[in-house]
Image (cartoon, rainbow, N blue to C red; front, side):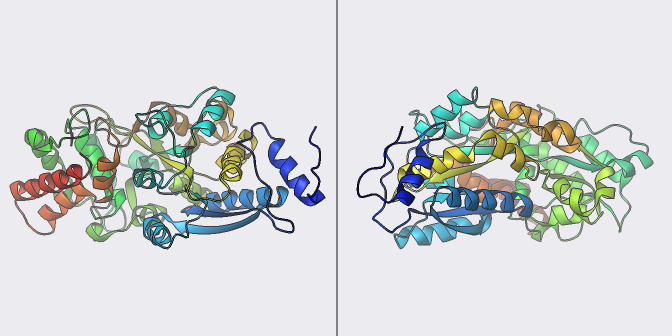
Length: 433
């Protein structure tokens, strides 16, 4: 039983007791000076409103329960690195962040949370799928904790496909194009609502390219080998140009941002999009009639195989926090199954721990069921390339989509565009050699 130390107010004692009475505690939380509350600054990932609200509401409730002053800021993903870089330079970083785990780990800015990782693993029967591959570093240490896995799937107008005489989902990328041409109703509905721009949603084309047998770097993730795969790249480019010339892409896709494929489908203007189920979560609230006409399928195959990458949501702690054990406690409590079960009903995330497989949402909502398969079978981003800091930078650079833009926007030859892509990759990977 905890005994109240002399010199500590009852309010401070209750706060400390609350932090040490959970399923796990991390180190010794040192009470602040008399009359002060412990404080945490939390930058939460902003993308899907229902999910954002669920995570913010939990943080507020947790702070009230534990008598913690919690300052919460919602930061859009595309603005995060700019804001956190400025905060690092000003030596005024937040305590907890939900973005930039990989980039900040590479910069040496994160607190080690291996203890949280291992206790979660033990408590909940292990991590699922690619989760541990994203968290465990080569030396065994962990600097961010995943709370969800997600990935793009084929989202399709099954009503329009059925009307066009297409009863089954596409099994290959070539079939996607064939079905898109059959089912589209130009100019009202285009076949494939996918960007070819310098936004990260355009990296779907890199996924398609990998299904043609292409890889960017060697087995160690150190040396660029794209130049050795010219034949496979040319086969992929033949397919892409077939898509481009077929008139199935809406006008303006070379300038789309990451919201445009969502909004295009939600407006009923595309047969196929390749996106996370955030589209369907929005439809569930705003257009259930269209949701009823929507199918959700795993990615099709290319000539050399199937690639189904998964991305993730995670939390990490900045290493200069003044309350490291308190921040770790928040990370632990944020993963509590009851809380995650409720949050999963309004979020795009699939399960990361074995305990989460039993959540009701994955049983009741048809469009959420596929997230289990995605979590269990999905590969780390970039597979078979190594998901490391170099790959991550080229991903943010949208290297392969820029190659495509050079061909269709700037009218470059394939050889010239390919040479530039190889050069860009060499420069990026050389920084991490």
